[in-house]
Image 1: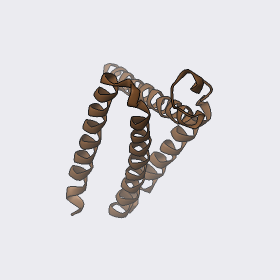
Image 2: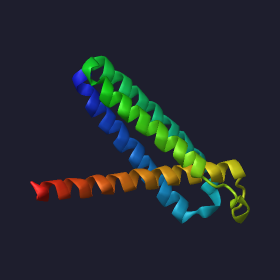
Image 3: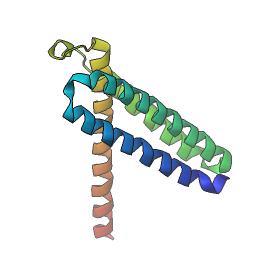
Length: 135
């Protein structure tokens, strides 16, 4: 069962991603119903965080020597989440229809997390390229 967990995680990630793409297309086609899709985005984010935490715990159970990596990963997720929420600004909620300040703050936090993780990915790629060239 433990050897099938990475596959299950990948399939679950692909399914959530496809649902997100379909909902994005639906929002782009009909902006009047965007608030319901924002709720789905928040639910998907919470589910993703729970899956990530469970993945950390499961990898710790499978490989107890990897506690350091698990701790670093869990700390990174917590730091990105907290930093994203602290930097989020929901003050522009008056610009949108049928949206509360809490909703715009949550959306802003999710976008901030996306930007932070995206910047981290770009930096990791640049670091990898530079280190390969240096060798």
